[in-house]
Amino acid sequence: FHDLSHPGAPPFCRRAFEIQPKEVHWAWFPYIAFGKITFLDGDPGVGKSFLTCGVAAALSAGRPLPGQKEGFKWRVLMINGDDDAEDTIVPRLIANKADMDNIRLIDEAVIMDRKGVDELEEWIKIHDIAFVFIDPLSAILNGEMDMFRANEVRAFLNGIKELAQRTECAIV
Image (cartoon, rainbow, N blue to C red; front, side, top):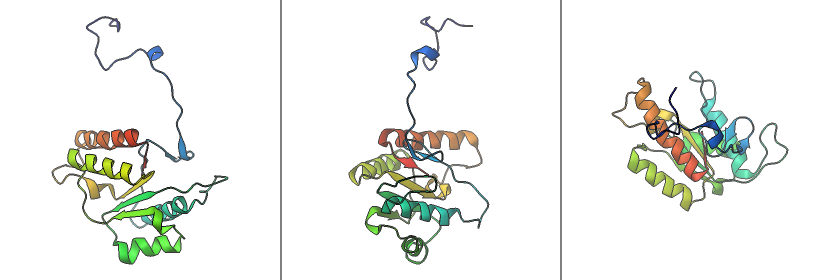
């Protein structure tokens, strides 16, 4: 083993006692945490998009989610690359009694390269967004990226993870 206090130790390696533990702040325990990415996965047609609209509506209106005693009103950004806002997303939000003033929608292609991440971060801060729902993940992938290559997806997701950490936003 290498002596980690030695000048030749890898810079990314820390001794555990040097790391200060921190508490996770849950938006919906144990499913969605602030400052983190949460993945919702399932087969096509099982209701993932319907579920995200229901959760976004509850968050926007301050209603508690299942298992919560109280809710809080939050601003929500929905990025959707599959469904139209006019005939699918907004009707679902209305049916779920969303506070429409607390929901922002992007229903066009958004490429999350370095420039796209920076622009989204600025937008999150300006509009005080607490939750970002991306449906589906492929809606924001760089067109040159092969989503079946783990190294490419991991590098991409690291940028999104860092965005969540910097903004303390929950990204689903």
